[in-house]
Image 1 (spheres, rainbow, N blue to C red):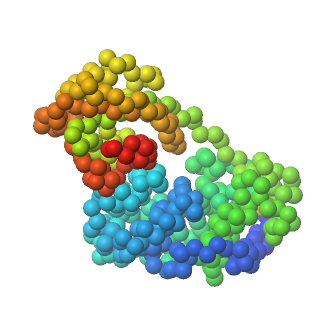
Image 2: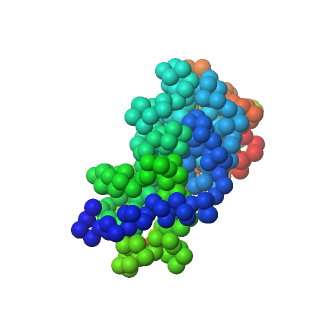
Image 3: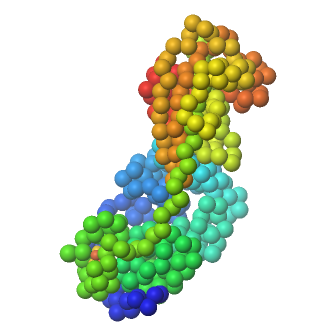
Length: 364
Ligand code: SF4
């Protein structure tokens, strides 16, 4: 803790939160279960996702796969397809893998301790603490963005919450605050308090039970805390998609590892350093994937779309191109492309940008 930190609030803090929580909490389905599978599902979905957006996905997954065994046995494409629109697709891939790990290494039962849960793929400190406390009442404090904010403001912690080294300071404090008698309730309460009372912008300080103990409020620093350094500016990538079509099919391919959207389907793609691609360059790319353009069927205007990810911005243009003949087998092998009908395309997992393009072009 910094020299400015506030130790007065310690004894008061947990009690105030535990009193506040039952009167203000939102009624959410994962709060009615102690099933570690359902809790884990909700936590994976809610990482980097708002409750309102994540809720239908949670219900969809639980309905499609009521048990970890059913999720483990599901086809990867189907698991990714249900994730479509939620972003950060590595979560879905990890989730599927973790389900298989739970089945193969733990006989279909989630580990019951924080330390053991950390061994699961995609389960970091936050998720392990959430499952261990919510499902098994282990006294281990969760740290998410809401918790960082509440602790920083109430206790006057000025460490940069984006710096990995700060985590330890917050974790030590949170572990001191969590009561052994109600670890699950405390963790839920502090996160909920950050989500609806001590919000990033315009926190409800006026009606806050911690107001008299809150360092930030008492020192006029509510807007300065928590301290968070800015992320690096996102780089821009220019994608030119070749929507190659023949008869009633369109060519798509599954994206490989080591780039965004692994395992999702998009079209033939060339990436450039600048926004534009000339007509000649475009035709060269079509030829490079083994295609021959049907000269009377290069008709559709190019459509531009933008997609902003956490660390990069994708500016994409779609070039709809009709082929004279199907792509030869050798070209399919080298490019990874395959022909799909509209019904098949519907069932493929796709980046939301591709799904939006297809929605706007119902002929695909
Ligand atoms: S007084 Fe304001 S800043 Fe302090 S805990 Fe309450 S809502 Fe947050």
